[in-house]
Length: 195
Image (cartoon, rainbow, N blue to C red; front, side):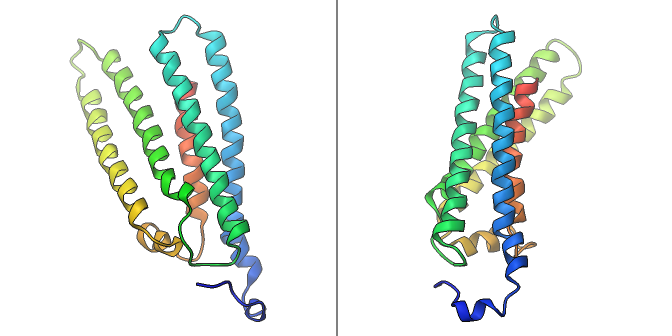
């Protein structure tokens, strides 16, 4: 769909439109960048404090940091693509960074959940309270299935309008859900680094 003609802009409540759409995704990227700063400080403290940790755990922390940095870069690119390049164009091709974002979301979520499950298995090893690790592992497998579905749908959608219709029909006129989605993955990484 072409850009909204300037003559029609006066009829719209532009301030409300911008706050609920562009403002929401901008705030999501700002909050995401702040949480990435927290991740950087957590990673620095981890390597300084836990130098005796096994090599595989240090590699995993570095891997999570790289995935988190890529996630922030994809978020920034997506916001630039939608807010600057396609300003006030509601129906256009989905940005490559937005298509790849579910892959990073899934890698981070499943990786962190796997590490939580491993810690629970170690904690309950040899005990009779095996139910907790079994339930967490079952939920991990379910989240892996949801991740595969999200990746699949990210590649079949054609326009950004399709994203709103498929995923978030409850909020069709705003992008507040994207703000929350940008921040949620950062919280996964921060929660793991805090352990």
